[in-house]
Image (cartoon, rainbow, N blue to C red):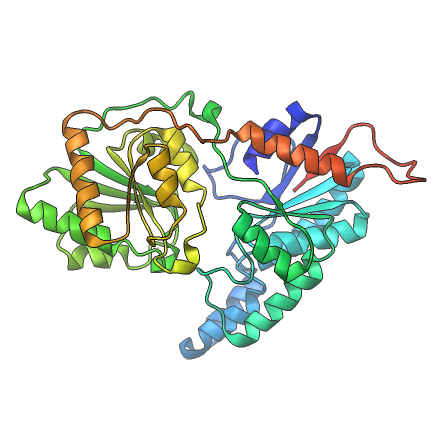
Length: 395
């Protein structure tokens, strides 16, 4: 969505971003950004008190009720109020919402209903049927109904792969557009390449509380280090939801080389990626995730270092990495070991950077695709005398 905010003006659309507040030090200098509500996952004091007052055995159930449809639920009321107020100020022609979290779509559906504006609902991940989300049966039923009710009113649905589009089309019984992920070369211009001073493996992104399991690569790093086949290795993890990462590192005796940095400013993560000897992707091993590229592969392409990706053997990442000579894909222990040894040899020979990718899409292409969709949903109908001359989009 940051790419749309940056590149849509080049396609004739003037975006205004409606988004959450973020922790101090993680804001940007973007103009036309309206920040409302608490950071996602921070409930109101009343909701927090409700959870705290519940015995520990029932806290999970309390969270399931308070955080509906998800951790961003408390953002919906201020987002709706902020969006409607912004529509009076900016005279929008269309709304674009991007999820997850799904609360963004819920807020957009209410704003679209109140303003009668065309609405494009963009799915970066599935809402229902997401393999990384485990819900009790009663919540699944309610969430499915809420998705059908809210997103069903959108003018156009968009997602990132044809496989996800087919799934969404079956849920909503309508065509779904596809706009693949990409990366922005311009945002890397002031991030210099730094030769790694150690065999540093960098992972930037969520591990989904262990659903993306790093243990197979931790085990192989531990074995290769113990055998002396690799030396001076360091592993840096950036992002939310690390799950049992540090406990796994202790279990394999490499807690001295595994560092978890948490959520950091994007520029810090980008600097870490550009100074890595090897960039790590960890996918869920469930075959149901085989059709997902994720967004990290494209960011890593822009960063430059070689990539080691772990996932199910059927993953679409495997041929993508091979065809673009991005590094190594591994689904078995021997493949992980081989990838690590090859990455280490490349580091020893100072060959950590790759050649440019052949199949990469640019951030500008995303904006061009969305501009075409916005143009289509805002085509004036007969008697539509209120059409604005200067279109604008709202998230």
